[in-house]
Amino acid sequence: MRITGITDIVVPIKSSIRNAYIDFSTMTASVVAIATDVVKDGKPVIGFGFNSNGRYSEQGLLRERFIPRLKSATAKELQDERGLIDPAKAWAAMMTNEKPGGHGERSVAVGILDMAIWDAVAKAEGLPLWKLLANRYNGGKADESAWVYAAGGYYYPGENEKSLQDEMRGYLDKGYSTVKMKVGGVPLKEDLKRIEAVLKVLGGNGDKLCVDVNGRFDLDRAIEFGDAIAPYKLHWYEEPVDPLDYLVHAALATRYMGPLATGENLFSMQDARNLIRHGGLRPDRDWLQMDPALSYGLVEYLRTLSMLRAHGWSPRRCVPHGGHQFALNIAVGLGLGGNESYPQVFAPFGGFADNVPVKDSRVKMPDIPGIGFEAKNDLYAVMKQMVA
Image 1 (cartoon, rainbow, N blue to C red):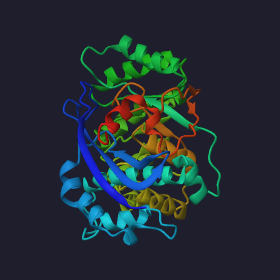
Image 2 (cartoon, rainbow, N blue to C red):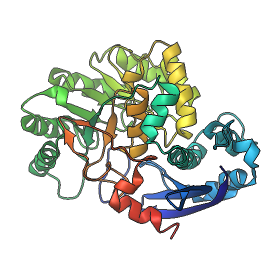
Image 3 (cartoon, rainbow, N blue to C red):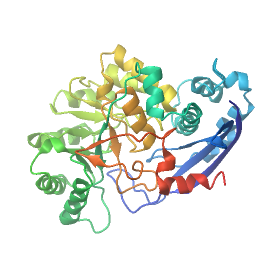
């Protein structure tokens, strides 16, 4: 199995929505296609990848460093003993001459290509990625379905409590029973009114609601907000403080007794390990949200899962950020705790395969080779123009 070509494009995903930290008015994403010499059903196998939301396109890094390294590697340098592309060897080729540390944006660029490589390898095997992962790393055992929650509740022009409630009712109508909303972007009293409005839609069940601060608070404000929401007994209180300020996380965890969630802005196994060592998180209740597409891909995520096990954490405490099909395959194949979902935002990258129903916040995986992009029409329309 050889790489015969790599193509990349930039796609706008701009939106008027905002969270407590940024707006998405200029957001973009990179999409790549990796063509191979493997032929299935009379057509060459092509793997696709893209970067998860919240980061901008990585075209400069892709074209200057990581795509050239993949192209210059010999077939022997990239292949496993069966002659298929070995994602770990491809990862090593991409990271040639890169210093340790400084994980920032390069982790996103590598993650895009890693996604495409796994898509191509699974297609070459004729297997859905979730099944390939279960066979290779989970004793052949895949979950029958994955828990998913609907992420939304952003701040946007003209938003009010009624429109927020209508949005959340829409998610319930789509089959979700757990939802997430943004907080921290308005005064506390206003956010509490927004939370209470959503809780009315959920029948007062706080365990069906997650709130996300996107790292906006300092410790004092995180404590104040946490004290205010504690009576609601929410499903989790997400990224209340800066994601790299582990001491502040640890301090908050001594005060807020409910579940905390964080990790979407940690981009390496080493960053995640520092969180586990120093962040005061509790493996019996807290949640880890590292996103494989943003953090050097699945090759690195496998290292992260090994590290977590060594520190007494179950993969079931991992619910990746991003709401994309790549992480959903990983959740099902490796037995994670679930996956984020974006039913309404970040089109066409958010959401899962078409005609795959969500029932009580659980979704079953289709039996489609690779990641399954071809079963998501609006996303595949973007991808197939790269190889037409």
